[in-house]
Length: 406
Image (cartoon, rainbow, N blue to C red; front, side, top):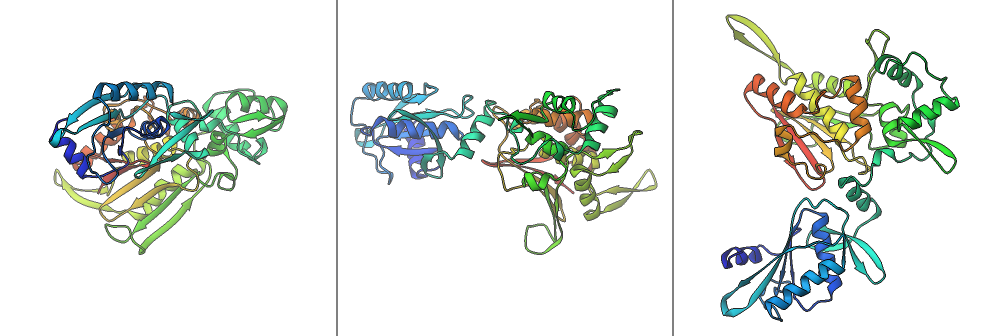
């Protein structure tokens, strides 16, 4: 990093990805900052810079400072890391050490040693603090170390799963010719084997995935299970709305033996909301009047299903947000993209699944594109053919938004 870039970084002040520190602090302090940056999206620690941006410089030789940083990263971080180190000389001869922590660290959560304990750290604004239990769970999930969908749902037993939907799935989708009676011991074992239920402490509970897919009253047990659908009056969010619905229930619909929809699920109800709150336009094509929906159904369907299947369900108290504006549709999913997945990777067709059971069963039903490349194979081509636009993606720390233009 040259001096100009360094001074610009200092002028911008401390941020979620930049921290200023002296190099004579206790090792636990810098270890905590590095762990917090690793658990977020990487960043830099500037050693020899005061909190107010004044450059005080390293208090020891650059080589000694580097040795100290590497020792801290090895002994006070778990898993241990090797950050990038460089030194930049400023006017007056003051030296600033730059510790760079890469983004997308694969082994989250990173912990720093505090006395005899290892503590997970998170970066919030310009501060580093201990992670809450929920934050630590999300970090494990991001790295693939925890499958949140396999957690038991407190108070929800096997009887709270809709046997009608389960029998339809087993018979019509899986092709099972014989199945145990609901409530029997073989039925319980079958649900556990498919990870729709789990045994713990001598009791059998519905899993998060089981409740999301087949729960009879999913909203009671998992408030974050559905979609908040809002149609705004205009091009910006505001208090004036045309329609506002909370869509809760099993993700998949209930079908007859012939495959006809008998009872809608969250997906069908969300698509119906879009249909009721958007319109059609007419145009002449080859001399004929042709009517088209404001948005291609294939693209809307894929974006809605992706949000439900890939969202971070460990973030409680918030639904997928489906917003209809005069000029666009936005679908906002709680949680950042899964670890190592980028927007560019999604466009290129990289396959990923935060919630493997949800993905697998929704694919069985035909809700999910078979090859797992719905953005590349469905959404992008559908929008290009519809109006020549591309879907817009906005990745933020705790949410991911897809925008389709009218």
